[in-house]
Length: 89
Image 1 (cartoon, rainbow, N blue to C red):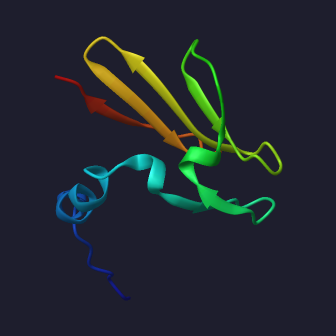
Image 2: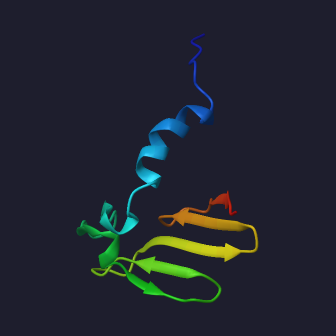
């Protein structure tokens, strides 16, 4: 029986702090549906209610959702079912 060792999510804090502190509009992405590459600034964004939804300009695939609530910011990336909740100051 083989056991895989793993680290907890705290190991992501350092690497993520390097990318979450930059201008997000310069981030590049590749659409998993149509393969189009481009920056976050090129997404087609819809909203504002119930939040902002960014879609691929090539095929309209979901790229991200951003929902603001008092005290929190929700971020869903891609078409997945999960989301991250960040505390707001």
